[in-house]
Image (cartoon, rainbow, N blue to C red; front, top):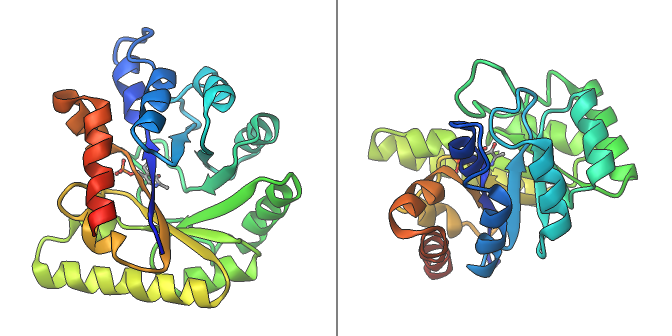
Length: 240
Ligand code: PXP
């Protein structure tokens, strides 16, 4: 399966929020990302609004030419915003105020009833739902049980692995998880912590159709520009 690249531009907004000013503007970043070959723009409107603002979401919804993937907590305020703004995909993620970034996946097993309701409501509004989960058999089965059409596998443990054997073990977990999800009829994305060194092994997994990558691309963009940083990542994925 061909793997498409979703570019997460949250950290363009992180840089702007460092001065609470107007630049760099994630709306411009979204346009450049699409010109460089991103197939999807991914943004996370956090409850604490630490990077992406509602203004960004609304403007990017109007300007995006590909697809908009909104990462969001399954809380009432943000779900209402999603109903209003209508992203192509809502990726439900866990959120804790004190975290540096999204740590771990959703506990679908432990929150089945609440998540099932949100999955149903978003689906009824014709917004595709994806659940961001660890590559864990129980979480995959639970995602399927509550009617999610799609999952995004959390690749953070693979990315953070310190030894070769640990990395291989984490990669195998991702492969097994992706195969099971596909067997159950769900489509599969992956992301978190992917960079120019570790991306290819994940891009080779046939069952995964999309990678969402943010921090490594925006970091490289500081030195080589956003267009080049995205094209470099796309080349690695395409050649994997
Ligand atoms: N996918 C999801 C669901 C995420 O929450 C994030 C981080 O916001 C990413 C992908 C991108 O992770 P990174 O910035 O580490 O590439």
